[in-house]
Structure formats: structure tokens, C-alpha cells
Length: 337
Image 1 (cartoon, rainbow, N blue to C red):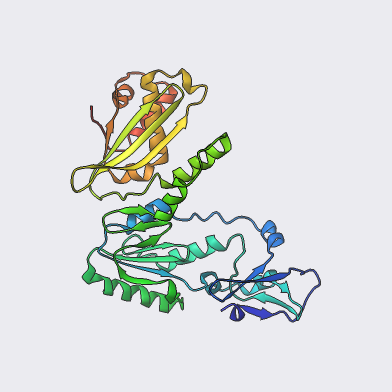
Image 2: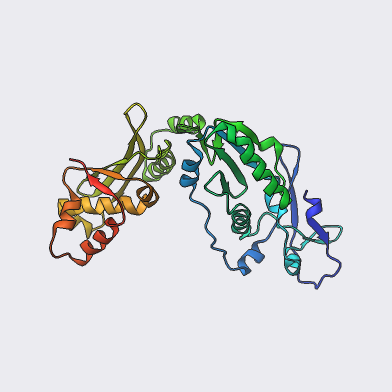
């Protein structure tokens, strides 16, 4: 694949002197490493956004049949614009070459690839297809429809001459690792190896070790899928110098499963807030961090007092409360004493 992605540069203006290195991979293949730092520094950043990983994981659950595909050398399947090929030129002992297809190492390669995949599967996305860079998931609510869904995807892949890596594909399965989590029809699990790694960590003895532990725990804070159609339960709590939330949801047995834990320290100005204002602050904080869940679910708010009543019942609102009120109006939030 790599050899077919390059072309010999017959003319050299003398200013291209990028070197190349070769690394052996565990699968017996060779990875080509080209130093594109100067080229990347000269290129403006493409800010095309990647999908929100948490939403992708949520969208993959709740299906009877799943197929996971990984594109074979995905970047090398995107054709370079002919006028830009010369910018990827690199030196070898034999001659100078450049890429005909997009190589790894370019600053905007990921954004370009994601944009391309979203255009190709635009009419299928969030229906029976999810695409995260070179990961492609085909999901079917009913197993009997899965073959039909796969056929549509394969036709689209063939139309655009995209190739998959068979060794990294799994078809018609009920669970699989996706974006670092194990997704199933009814739930999401964290990999046991990641849990074991945290359990084996020594007790933090300084602030840097503590921050490292907090970072690893943040990765685990979300590991159970949301069940469509069921409300979410939001617990909010405040302390003198911090605020925190717990987002939960009842499962089929009526038991609550924790979905998210969030907390942060209050600023010096926020320390002056009254207790009810701090509850309002915590509610707004949860909306800012978990807006995509508030948009797709009704929310049952559980707290010591009702911040919704405090904001909506005041005849005259300060600028801060007015801003909070506008944010709260967008969502269906019900206070549960």
C-alpha cells in the first residue's frame, strides 16, 4: 500500500530536504516516518470537528447486531491534490519522492479524513452507521436487518474504492471494543485491563501523583449506556469550595446506574454565592458539560432545595440569573424533592 502511494519526483528545486525513517511493526509490516514538521508549521489548522466520542459510544448500544470495520491504511486511500503532491516530497538515498495519496503525519490529515467519511456516508450517519476517523460501525436494531444494512455500506465502500482491513473487522457480533470501551446491546463496560491498571497504582503521595490519578479516573467516569426514552436523574450537591453532580438512570430492573460524575472547585467570586445560588451554579455547570444528554432526555433534578423555583420565581433577575434562566429554558428539567 505504501509503495503505491508515492511517486518519483523528477525535478527538484533544491529546497526540499525532508528525510524519511522506517520502523518495523509487530505485524511484520514497515511504518514510514516522514518529518513533516516544517510543512505542518506552514499550514493553517483545519478545525473540522471530530464527533463526540461519548455520543458515538451511546449510539452504538441498543442494537441486536453490530459490525465493526477498520479501514486499511485509511489515510493512504485519500488522493492528494496534484498541485500539493510536491509539498510531501522527501529524500531517500536513491532519489526524491512525494506522495500521491495522503500520508500519516500531516497536521490536517485527521480532519480531512473525517470530513471525507462524513460526506461519503452522510445519508446513513446516526441511522445505521457511525464513523470515527478510520473506525466504521454498522448497527442494526434487529438482527434480521443487519445483512441488508451491511450490503448498503459495502456498495458505498465499493463506489468510492475504499478498502477495509479484514484482520480488524468483526461482523454480526453483539459486543466489541470501540473507542476504548466494550459496547453491548444493553450496556457499556470499561476494559478490565484499564481498571486493573488503576487498582495497581500506588497511593498518591504528592499533588502531581494525585492529578495523574484524577486524570485516569476521569476516563472511567462514563461507562454505562443511556437507555433511550428513560429520563435521567441529576443529583447536585455543593460544598463551601466545590460543586459536584451525579447523572444516573434506572435500568430494566428499576435500579439506578451511575452514568457520570463531575465536580469542580469554585472561584473566589463564586464563594460569595448563597447556598441556593450555588445549587443554580451546579445545575448550569452540569448543563454546560453534559448538554448533549439534556437535549435528548428529560431530566429529574434531585437536590436539597429547588434551584429552578429560585430562578423562575424571582420577579427581577440579575444579569447572572437572567443568563442562567435562558439556559434552563432550553431543557425539560423537573425538580424531584
